[in-house]
Length: 128
View 1: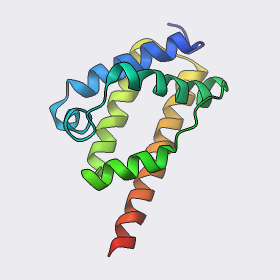
View 2 (view 1 turned 90 degrees about the horizontal axis):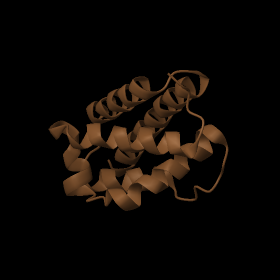
View 3 (view 1 turned 90 degrees about the vertical axis):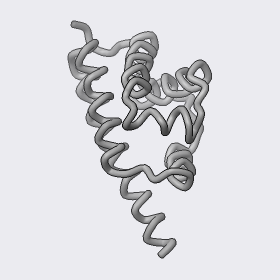
């Protein structure tokens, strides 16, 4: 099994990851009902994000934290949802890749999940 090396690898990973998310009723509603993502538009953005994070390509300019805070304002992004997100992400990585970059992307996903949960908790505390 190969490591993550190219944007094509990241496209495969993100595509497989979203197949898992969208087939899991306990989390899919966030993407289908709350956000109503258009996958054909969303996947290239995610590939760019992960390519910048893992391959150093640059090009991602969105405010990832604000995007998730906006989603949270519509529907609470609970720690349980982040756990599901991470579990599906790890599974997609482990099913297709092995190596330094595969481990790096899982570590960065965990860091991202942790930071977003802290920001969501801070936002909630500020509203109290």
